[in-house]
Length: 97
Image (cartoon, helix red, strand yellow):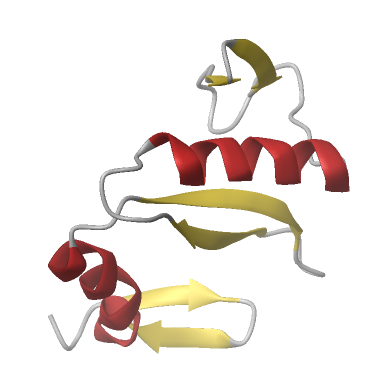
């Protein structure tokens, strides 16, 4: 695992550098999601991890949808990586990727 590298705008980083972001929600049992916030200067997607309170799975998803509306992050016709994802929050469609 120490030899696996991930390409980032700042160059390659060891995969294990990302473990704190993965382990924290897993060990605490808190729900989390990743939300797109734009593109880097080199065109790579940039996102943030949103964590919610214990047993509130919808909270980080709704926050991510509201944030996407506010900052105007959208998707092209093909969606993200060619997939279609419908984000629903409070029973309403908030975004389609």
